[in-house]
Length: 358
Ligand code: KG4
Ligand code: ZN
Image 1 (cartoon, rainbow, N blue to C red):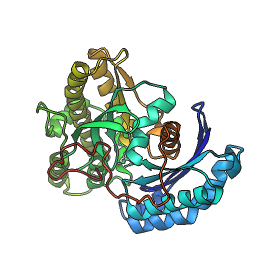
Image 2 (spheres, rainbow, N blue to C red):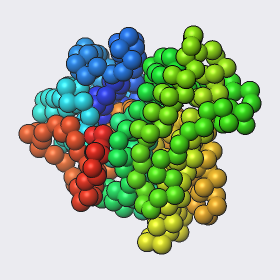
Image 3 (cartoon, rainbow, N blue to C red):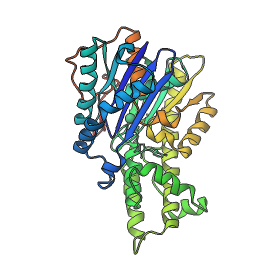
Image 4 (cartoon, protein in one colour):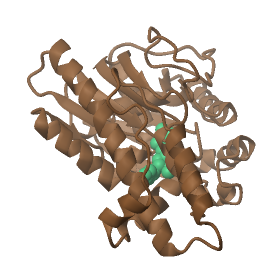
């Protein structure tokens, strides 16, 4: 079974073909970094137009890379939300058009489910598993019970983790996207102990019941440190120290929230190989990966982190989610609507102020 996947929900235009032997036959990702750089963040209208300009070429190239034609496909999966609605519409309509023209099943994929199911593509892991989803738009802890069945145990009450990385990096004068740049600066910190003393930061929600997150206080604390320093330009040593302290705080918060989730998971689910999966762009961060590695080790669990190219937004994860759904007979009508918000767990209690996109 060959499935074409299309992803256009944020600032990556992506097309991919994946088969039921868990092979990624192609996965092309065109990043719009240049288009948004000058604005220090993603501009929805610019993103939608850029998707429209490039998507058809990219789909053709993804098929060529896979050495397939439209006639070799068994279905078309497109992200139908959550995300920036203009971009989502572009990818969804392209997917529907191909499905209609070639009389193929169409699968409307929740972008978050794409992230959630990636470890089944890369590591063939069994349900249920615990999932920490950390990206620019969302920060959630979920239990993945089955395809289409998720329990959301925690979410952010304000900013997403990646957003907090990006905004803090911007405050330090680092370019967009801030996460990777901030990690590079943190790696240059020459005296970690001194850095933590120079730039103490709060750890919002640490030690609290449950698995919710809050990051706006952390970002504000970074702003105050920057303002206290900024008599002239921030020098690179200041930025490295502050980046290191920030990254350490972020890893500490995520480890604490996951520890709570792991305790509950091990109580509520009996599984032979308990696993914590991290996914989303922020899962690329080395300090966060190693903090979580320590946490899972203490609890006899295994950590799965997809390779970096499959952590950030890509269409292979959408094709795979579509494939898993189609295998279970889940397909969608061509009048399916695009959804700017689309929670993975519709029964989760809404959080006040929550929800960047979910
Ligand atoms: O999953 P993703 O590609 O897109 C969304 O769905 O949001 O995640 C992008 C986010 C950005 O906020 C980016 O700064 C962050 O992931 N990110 C990182 C790193 N690489 C990407 N954050 C921290 N450290 C990194 N190495
Ligand atoms: Zn994403």
